[in-house]
Image (cartoon, rainbow, N blue to C red; front, top):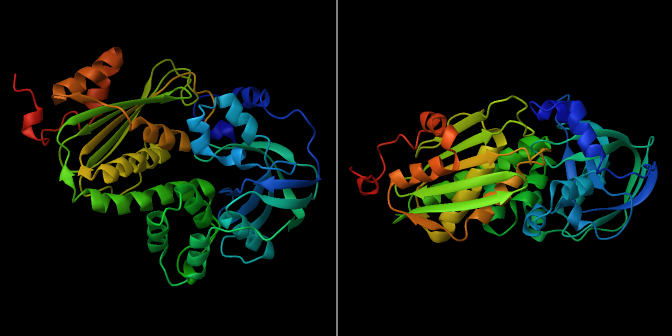
Length: 395
């Protein structure tokens, strides 16, 4: 899928021109030695026949930084720096039916389980072509069909992932729950799920990366939500803030039973909106959860919900969560929903206590004065009368 299709509003030509400025200038080679961060990618075009590939720069060495969202956020990497790293990768790929077995797919599983970069010797059918993909997943620019690929060594694998790979009786939800509970990151779980390593043997298949990201976020969130629902109620309203690469987040935790709402304000000139007016998207779930996909906010909904539930689980409290995401023109290239996940995770540090829902509304009004009425009209939580009465100003 092209960036033009993913970046609703900005034209494919504009997005491509901006990205080409930070892409590597050197000519791509057909044959090369590289090191995968480790990182794999499964496309969605043509499903149920898809491309599956191993990502790597065209040089050996420590490549972990090429696929390290947590480190990018911690080091405050710019869009240009991240795009430069990601567009230096080549996707060495083959086409498969999602249920197909192949020795190349065995290699992708080895890479997905690896604990450190994996050396590769790659021979492609021809020099890699430039076709930028991204959106929900991290961007990748070059790809080529594999003629021959050899792993330079037996990768050192994450033992918990390997154990779950060989457990062909566990359902995928059970596998994800056990891996996350044992400390395996959502990024490693997502990669393993994408290349068909988890779940009951008869149900294992390739899952496009962009789908597996949301599916993994959703499965982990449901596990955490079951725990959070039984926690003690939060005793005060907490207001958190975080900003990253042109995305500003306002996070409110409000005493009460679990509910969640994400409101996105996509400003004019941002990658998602070339119109003159701000586009507002909203999705919500009650205490019982959602029954259908969050169409309006899509992967951002599941990424931000996971981060909020992680925090509530960590402090052993339950609450309603309202997140307002402000997408500004500074966010000119869609880097993937990891931006939302990591920025909301980072928000949960210092916070300001608010006295009432009136203060929540005032804080939103102060930040978005001319948009406030539109935000309030679309919000479920701002209009709710189900919060603990003590948090409403009776005047």
